Amino acid sequence: MSLAPSAAPARLAFDRGHKLKLGLFGANCSSGRSLTTVPERWKAGWDEMSAAAVMADDCGIDFLLPIARWKGYGGETDFQGTSFETITWATGLLAITRQITVFGTVHVPLFHPVIAAKQMVTADHVGAGRFGLNIVAGWNEDEFEMFGVARKDHAGRYEQAYEWIDAVKSMWSRDDFDFHGRYYDLRGVRSKPKPYGGTQPVMMNAGASPDGQAFALQHCDAYFTGVRMSSFEERTGVMVPAVDQATKYVAEVREKARAIGRAIGIFTRAEIVCRRTQQEAADYYRHWVEECADWGAIDKQMQISKHMTPDMPDYVQRRKQHLHGFPVVGDADRVAEMLAQLSSVGFNGVGLSFVNYLDEVPYFRDEVLPRLVRAGVRNAP
Image (cartoon, rainbow, N blue to C red; front, side, top):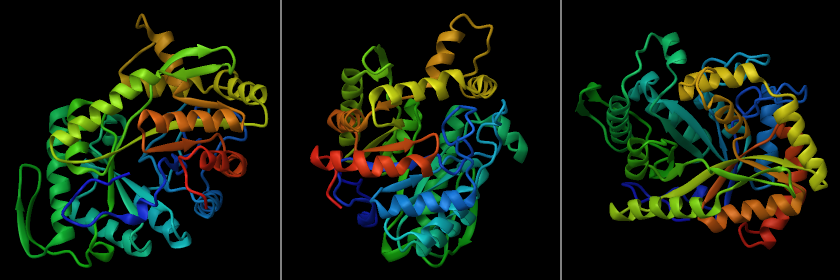
């Protein structure tokens, strides 16, 4: 993958030559990304989180990507109700790992750029250049009310994000300047030290709207987007991706980047259930997704993120789609095949989530990673 050009050299630590980068996604939050009540769900305690990070680092996983969450979604489990703040979380994990890139996910309206710039540089020096920034313009009004921050309209959120990142990049590259904008009026700004090694942290954004995508293409090295599902596959018992649609979308994003003289990595996410047999994987997937779904948390999340309520005509169908996400379910051959397919579509990386990261990553490491090496999308350790 070619990282996007910027004023500073690319972060080569993030680009170790894998055609398909892999990361753990959402492990800083209780339940991770699994809206389920099963007792083995992820608890996100520091001891298990740090053990999972070291394990991921040792087996060559490329990155850890957290979710910035300040308040849970209720339901039986209070989904993601327990979480670590992501810059301090990243700093701690960077101190105990050696190679992996650890992102901090930052809500622009909640972090003053002068403070955030120094916090991130601190993490970056702890990790010798392995900190990454996942920048979020902000959308969750339920959380923002905790801070007494009014949510801006969509255009206003990205106007502020452009100013915020301009201010942060300025602090990362120069000193003794004034910054005058609509949202920030900064005078005599000085911030030392600069990011590690004279480079800038890798930056990611997941804005799904045209404004969000335009922001990512202009300012970020990586754009994070979802994969849409298309149909139910009888053989595996799960939904499968709309490959043609995803191929077209990825190509369109790359063309937009080229049109403004940039290259960008395109990342997506997947929920992994990998077992010794296809049937075992499909049975467990149905168990945690459907039999043990946390429907109260699902309804709350849909209400906040999609502004949908149960009285809407298509609510039941949308609710089911929301629950499923993008499952990669099967034995090691099938899981490796689907991840390699995402690479063939044009994705540069995938953020992986598991019901329990610490319990399930070892089998993924031992069985799926070697298959991805043989498929030509990962380098041998």
